[in-house]
Image (cartoon, rainbow, N blue to C red; front, side):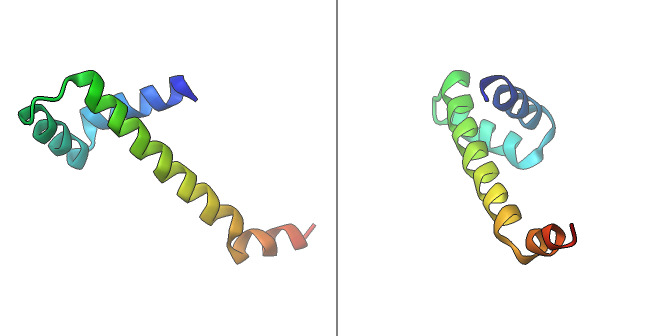
Length: 68
């Protein structure tokens, strides 16, 4: 999970405007790039876990499984 989370973090830091704003704000607070990336990776992991739970626990997945 280390390599994909690093890549997602770098892409978001470069292309995702809310993440760019976050990086600017944290840099102004005196945080280093490494510290900012660590925080972003943790946020991305929480977000991914939440999305995985929702995707597997909803009625849509059960309906799909019962077709086969």
